[in-house]
Image (cartoon, rainbow, N blue to C red; front, side, top):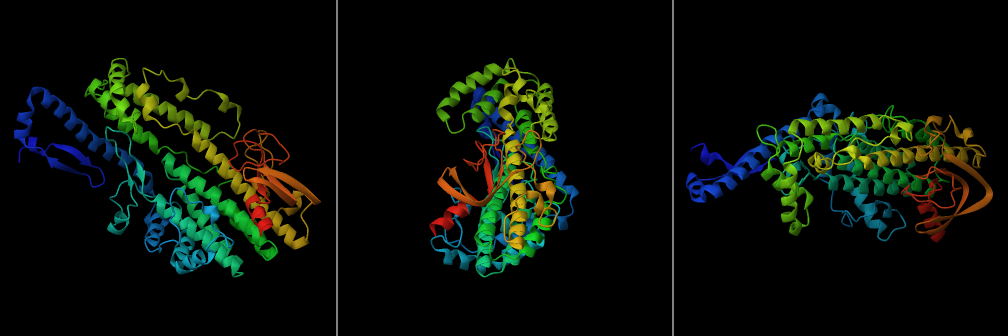
Length: 508
C-alpha cells in the first residue's frame, strides 16, 4: 500500500487508529480543485488525530502521578455496571430530591435500593481515596465500561467541539441509589448506617469535583449541593429519632472531613484547566506550518463552532472567519494569550470571596475581539465554576452547622439561643462560615423561640419554627430570611430548617 492510500478522511480518537484509506485513483479523479479541497480535508483529519492525542496526554498527565489503589473511578463505575434498572428513568429531567418515603411508589424505590447493596459497599470502600481520576479517552477502560458508554470522548472535528462525558449517567444513578438507600435505612431506624452511606456518597462526589474539565466540575458540584440539601431533609425528617451522640459524631468528625483539610471555602478544590488543553488543540489545527492563520481552516473550524445547531448560518460565518484569518494573531501569540487568560483565572481562584482584586477586569474581557477572535471562541469562560464553588461551600457549611445545631437540640431539648453553644461539641466552628459575606463572617442564626417565621420560596410560603440558619446570598445582604432562593441568585439562602422537608411534613 502506498503512502497516499494510507491517508484518511476521518480519525477515530477513542482507539487512536486511522480509518477508510482513500485510493490513489480517487485522488486523480478529483482534479486540481478537488485535490486541493481533499488535501485540506486530509490535513484537517491527520492534524485532528495528532492534536487530540496531545490533548489526551495533557489531560491524563496529572492522573499518572496517582497510584491505582488511590483512584476511585474504576471500582465505583465497575460497581455501577451491576445496578438494576431503577423504578423510573434517571435522565437529565430527573429530580434527585423527589426520592423520599412519602413519594408515590416509594416501596419500589426502597426495594430497588435494598437490592443494590453492592453499590453501597463500593461507596463505603472508596470514600477515602485520594481522587476520582476518571481517565480521558477510552484506552484505560475495559470492554465492559466501554460498552456502557462510560468513557470521556474528546473530539476536535470541524463541526464543533464534541466533548462527551458518558459516565455522568452512571453517577446520577449512583446518587439516586444513595438517596433511596439512606431513606430506606432511616425508615428502618438504622441512622448510623444511613449517615455513613450518605457521607460516603458525598465524599465520592467531592473526589469527582477535582476532575479537570469545566462540565465535570459543574456536574459534580451541583450534584454535591443537591445531595447535601437532601441530608438536611433527612435530619429534619428523623430529628426526634436520631440520637444526640450520632449528631455529635457526624457533625464534628464526618461532615468536616468530606475532603480532608478542605477548609470552609473548598480551598483544595482544583480549578478546571482541562478546557485549556482542548482550546489549544482547536487553535493548533487552524494555523499553517509557519504558525500563521489559515483562511480555509479558520472558515472550517470556527464557522463550525459558531454555528453549532444552526447550520443555515454556517456559510455566512465561514466567510466572516475567512476574513478574520487575515487579521488574526499568530499561533504563538494566540497560545500566549490563552495561557494569560488561564493564569488570570488561576490567581482569582485563590482569592478569598469578594477580595477587591476580583473587581479588576478579567484578561478574557480585555481581548481584542478581532485579533484574538479564535481565542475568544475556543476558550470556555469558567465563571460558572467560581459561582458553583461558592454555592457548594455554602451548602457544605450550612449542612455541617445545621447538623451541629440538631445535636444540641437533641441533647438539651431546645434550640440554642446562641449558635456558639453548639461548638465544639456538636460541630466545628470553622465551618460556620458564610461565603456570601463580604466581611468573611459567619452564617446567620436566629432562635425563633416559641415563634414562627413565614418564608416566601419559589414553591410558595412555608412556616418555619425553632431556629434559622442561612447565608446572605448573591446580594450579600441580610434580608432576614423572609424570602429564600436555593439557587443563591437572590435574597437569602436558608439551610435550616430545610424548607422542602418542612413543606412535606406540613402536608403529611
